[in-house]
Amino acid sequence: MQKKTELEVKGMSSFSKIIGVSLCFLIFTFLPASSNVEIITQGLPPTKGIHMSIGTLPNSNIIFISTGEIDAYDDVWVNPDTEINWYYYVDSSGMRLLGARCYTTAYPMCPRLNLNVSENLAHFRTKIKLIKGVPVNGSVMFNFGDSSYKVPVSKILPYLWDESWIGHLWGYNMNGSLIFFPKVIMEIRGARVKYQDCSIQNGSASVIYLDQQYNITYYVKTSWKKSKIKSEVIDQYNLLNLLKKPIYLFFYNGTLKAFEAGRINFKYSTVLATTNNSTSVFVNPSFYYSNIASPFVSANTTYPHAEESNVASHRQDKHEFWLLAVMLFAVATICLLCRNRKNM
Image 1: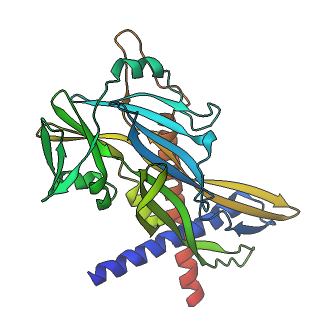
Image 2: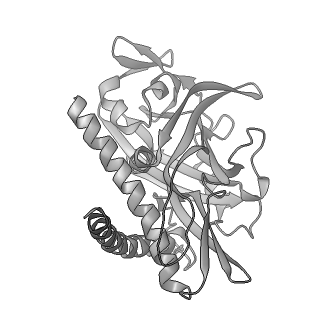
């Protein structure tokens, strides 16, 4: 176990070093050789975090996921201009996106889907009784009085971001089946940063980061306040692994079905600022939520994804990832050769 941990740490450190060195490579590739380059680390960790909450419309079977940007260091408010509410309907056949509403439609991440949200919500909305599941002897019990359901914890855990969510599952009974979800709030913010110096002989490049740390906090809503469930700081390597897991909603009638609602994505943006003969590069990681569920299509109308939707953005992100991966490999090889040559 100890050997495995040491290998993971070394791998994470190497991964961070490669990213850092690759930034130097990218800068010196696309800027004139005579420029002095300073990599500014104030943009690390991210200046924008993400807030996401899961719940239902009041007394309704419509599940919504609310997302919004938060300041990376301020635990006070969510930027209202970035708020998006995503509405989902779940039954035995699967899950469908009924639409999304943005507080500000001009927000760049506002989904471009031609869905009649009001009409869809009115069509699928049903009054229900929402109750909290109670963990009992390795199962989560949902008791509605005239009917009850016991869902094995072992079946649910693989789909949750954290074990602490088991105590915060809520569900409702519809047409003789159970539909449930984690009624939680999650926030991802930047935490501390560890640094490493990067020296280039034929130019100038100052500090680049070794490892970024992120604070992930889970809450539940009590009255008008948030009550903290758990908070932890993880590095970027573990964050990226965590973000591979989508947000799931569940259907149970003796057999558990887990449906993917959406996922939190992570991306980098860079800004170049040139003063006289010196260029500063600001590197800023950020987060955004993208829907995975298929949008509802009525019998008479087709609702296609617009070209600006997150689906197109996701494909572009994949292309950019592989391009960067190839460049990282090349840079890492060059740096290792240079280091070995220097030590000779």
